[in-house]
Image (cartoon, rainbow, N blue to C red; front, side, top):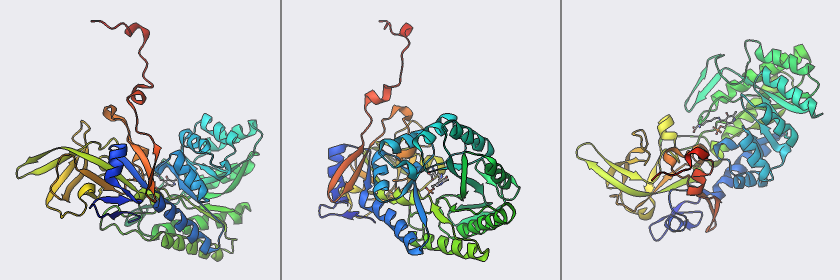
Length: 438
Ligand code: LLP
């Protein structure tokens, strides 16, 4: 997919770069991001929304992969950016991302984060609860500003891959319940606050979703609620944000829809539902993360040791693992992989890929078919662009890998490999321990 091919040296090539050359130049583990594919996904969203004729914003959910170069791409593609912490906000601002296109999420924004975002004059806060609402009003007042908000509501729809559940679920750490009066009450309070401009509602129903039914159900609930608010409180919303969650294909058998199909289903459902209530169609915002960057990422590892336990399995260990990709250990996520340096050879054995962290749970892939694996081979794990670098850790004091963007035969480092100095840069040895005994 994307610009990935097998070149005439029999090597995996991405963005016109031979992956074995990338390994020679940058070392392993290495995150390789196909820049053209990231931009293609951005354009798929933007084009599909333009086709709908609605006013819209596509905000990249930066939690999936937040580095300055990525913020530049999002800016260049004309999109907005969703941040959930001071760290993501700082990254975006340092990258020169226009503040008015930044949306701030999260269920526990600290007073410091709120102040930082108000000072930066970001475009919108997605307010999660009443405590936050009043804190935001106070901070905005001190700074003599009026801030735009959406309320995050829980529509009682939970979607995950194939299933969506309409639970009427009230038990969530996120958002205000639509059915039990919490969201309604929050709106009444917001209307009284001088420094708050309520634009509309936000709903996010889950992640890695393949079907459109869950989104349609959420739209239905949100629109019914908006109509009730209009009728009873005389407020007309100008924005409805339907969150992210659009699925990608990690392995054969995953069957996401094309981006355009999700967008079309959502926009049609929005238009139809608002029309039913004779309600002027608001702007539609979405927040895709995984589906912008997920399949653009490939992680390259060097194979180190291996061992065959006769009659049981063959373990093949690579020079990374849960520290650069915690998703298999955390969620039992499954990935596909190939030998990048022998991409044209037939599969000959079934092996399981182990990481190098001191933990039995650090297994990247179970039962993977590969050519006969040898020490020094390069293993390429695909679809690692989302929630991999973003969730990487220094467990075992393993240094985080570099990230390179590849495009048209050129490779640019966008995150340097961590150094030993980085590893100890925040360590402090108290003076009384500085005397080294011998
Ligand atoms: N908007 C909100 C409010 C969200 O909570 C999320 C993801 C998104 C947008 C973007 O969702 P996406 O399009 O990426 O599915 N660490 C997990 C995923 C957590 C998603 C959290 N929220 C994983 O690795 O699968």
